[in-house]
Every structure is written in structure tokens, then in C-alpha cells.
Length: 610
Image 1 (spheres, helix red, strand yellow):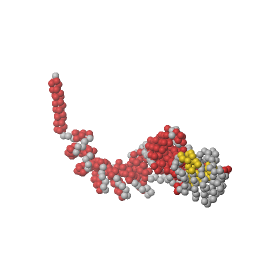
Image 2: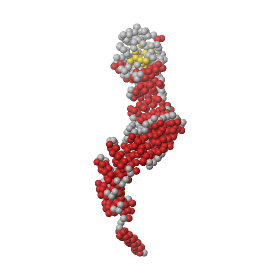
Image 3: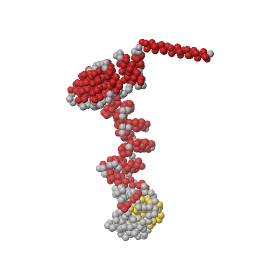
Image 4: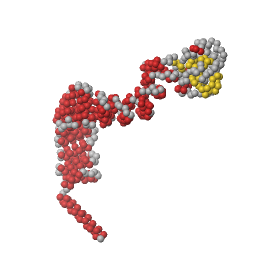
């Protein structure tokens, strides 16, 4: 017997009451109209059909008049019905063995979520066989009965399952609630998104996200989760496209808070894409959002890491203008930005602010400030920061020592630099690197201490450190200052044997020291075996002229012009000054004759015209 309660889409079907067989009697009913829902039957309970098929993509199908014949069902029966607004019973009396009463129809109600492909129905269906394989797979596709219809209880279940990382079970309950017209709370939805993304189920997470947008359950945290996951899985280009779609909608733009902007900035910060991070910063300002401490920390650290110090300083200034207190990481980064821009006074102010705020500057910040002060020639301040660094418990490293040595060199205190180097070398905990050796070699070069320079070079080679061409250049330069050409040549030959190619600075220094040491043949050989270079010829010619070897200077000058190399002004002047007097007199006479001939030619042309 089939009953339809008026004004309620509920269909009551009498079963035989036999729990083992679950056999339908041959009840027949005539239906017409459109599909309204999907029904399932277990045992002899009453099943409620909800109009939720369209949510899962089940189209409303138009059926012709169908005479439905229900057959035996072993476990589960899924039936798609054309339910009219009001139906009349087809039989006069109740079916034998019926245990369903009209008044109890609302007591035993179950909701079933079905995916569209589980609904065994099309416009030509005339018989519903309930033992189809697709029917049995409904649970596997995320379809469950919901005996509990309390939204709060079900939301708590989703939340608990998500926290336990049982993402499949949580997703099934979520689908069941949506299909049944129930609405999970926001906390449960966000927790479900998190567990889906943790397990790499981005496609399912996007479906849940779209469902949340349709139900207006999204917040800034929701968008942050999705954008970060999309950036990790599909690249930040996809994430920025999604973000632009969100901010282009007025309704969604109002839901995007500063957390979403911070998420986008962090995505580009991770990829060191400072340009896109700056664009997000500009969009944030345009939309009237006010950055937080996290916002400016991300911006400043990203800009400093990418070498955009001016942008970092602008972000820091805006942060202070908004009344925000920078954190330790932000202050360390901005110290580096100010130092690299040569604004050591601002870097010192930030360092003092950290001390006033009882924040402990790290060793790197102290080293950066020392280096900045050293480049500015502020030796006294540099050593004061060094003392502060030790008082904070930071052990000076090779970067610290190299910065102090460079500070002394810039202040022309080369002897103090060499003395400091000896102190550093006696500290057993310090392992010297090539930068410190090169710095002290510079001091030796300036003072002309060729013996000390050679000694440091041998120590450098003995320590198995990589010796560069610049290191040999400093030693040869020290020999040049001390007028030790033979030692310079020995260092040069040593350099070649070590498979180091001399550069132009090596050859220029060697050329000068050989000429001043009267080793003219060696100077000519250097020119012969080196690549043609105008600067090298200019140095050789000028040296020959200054030492009185005009014959060699003239020869080299001729060779230079033959190689199509251009002499500089100083070389031309020296060659003209050292020409013989007769040659100069003849040159002057020839020039005068040329000017006279030119004047006579002009007069002749004027007479012809007249």
C-alpha cells in the first residue's frame, strides 16, 4: 500500500516486516511529473525524500507515466521517483503484514546523500532493479545515512575527525550534511579544508571551498588555506590569478582581510619574488587595508633578501608611521638595509632602539654595522660596536675581523692593521680565510713591505687556501713600491707555475717595476708574450721616456701603431717632447709651408671668382 501525505514529499511504503528478507509486496503506484528526490529503503522504516538531487548535479528528468514494480531487495534499495504534490492510494486496504502507521510517519526518518550517478534513472526507465552494482557503491562515493540531524553535533564530528586526520570520514559527513540541507559551522569547514590539504587532496578541497563560497561560509582563514595550497601545488601564478578573481568581486573582496594579503606576500616571499610582493602591498594600500606587524616583517625581510633596500626602508617607515612596533627579525633586516645603503647613522639608531627595547642584536647585525662604519672610515665607532658585540656574548668571527682590518686600511692605518692581523693569527679559535689574508696583503702593498707580503703569501699557500690572482697582484705591488723587480719577477713566475693567468693589473705593475729596475729586456718580453693592450704599451713607453730610453720608447711606439693601438695624450706628449731638435725644426717649417700654401690657394680662388 502506498501513501502520500498531503503537502509533504514523504512516501510511506509498507514492507512485510521480515528483517531477513526485506521483501516488498507488489505495490503499484502511478506517478507523473518531475523527479523530486532519491529514496532509499532499509528494513521496514519510513524514508524521507528531500529535494537535494540538484545540489549534486542530478538533473530534474521528465518521465512519462511509469508503472513502478518493486522487487526483492537484499540490503539497500535506491529508487528515484516522480513525486507529485499529492497522490491518492491505489488500493483500498492495507497490505498484509504492514507495520507502518500514518501517524508514525515522521518518527523513523532517514536522510540519504546520493551522487548523481547512483540515481538509477533516465527518461526511458520503466523498471527499477535495486540490485545494480552502482547502487552498492553509493557509500564508497561518500554517501551515508544521517540518523543525526543536529547541525551542531554533526559539525563537532567533522571537527573531531579532521583533527584526528580522518579526512575521508570527515568529507563524507560534510557531503551528507550539504545534501540533506544541513549547514556545517565555519570552524568545522575550515578544519576539514586543513586536513584535506594536509593529505594532498587539493581537488576535493577546492570542491569544498566552492561549496563554502556558495553557502557564504568563507573567511580570510579559508582563503589563506586555499591560496597557499594552490601556490604550493600549481605555482604562484595560479594563486595570483585566483587572488585577482577574489578581489574583483565586491562581495568576496569584503571578506578578504589582512590575513589573506599576508598569505599572498608570504607565497611570493618564499619564491623571492619581490616584485609580486610589492604589487600585493600596493593592492593592500589601494583597498584601504592597514598592514600588521607580520605584513611589514614579510615585506622588509623579502626586500632586503632580494637586495631592494630602498623598498625595505619605505616599508619600515610606513610601519613606524602606522604606530606598529617592529620585531627583532624586522629590526635585524632593516639594519642590513640601512648599512648597505651607506646610512650607518640610521643603522646605529636601530641598533640603539633594540638595546633600549631590551632586544639582543645578533652577531650578524653587529658585523653589518661594523662593516658599514669601516667603509665610512669611522674606526673608533667600529671598535665600539666590536666591544658591544663581545659584551652581548657574541664571539667575533672572520667577518668581524675582516671588517675591522678594512676599517683600519680605509683610515690609512696600515701598521695597525698588520698588528691586528698578528693578534688574530695567535687566536687559536679563529680560522683565517682568504679575505683576511688579502686584506693584510693590501696593507703590506701600501707600505711596501715586500718581505712581509711574501711571508703572508707563503702562509696562505701552506694553509691550502685558494690563492687568487688578486693575492699575487698585491705581493707584486708591494715589490713595485719597494723597487724590488727581481722579487716581483719571481712572484710572477711562481704565479704562472700555479696555473694562474695574469690580468692587466699584474702586467702593469710588473711592467713598471721592471722599467724602474732597469730590466728593459724583461719588460719587452712581457709585451711580446702578452695580449696586445693599449694601456700596457702606454705604461711601457712612458716608463722608457722617463728613464731616458728614447730609442726603446720610439721602437715601442712604432710597434704600437702597427698593432692599431691608440696612444693616450700623455704618451703623445712625451714622444713629441723627446723628438730631436732638427726633427722639430723641420716639422715646424713644414707646418708653416702648409699654412702659406693654403692661404695662397684661397687668394687664387677669390681672384678667379672676381
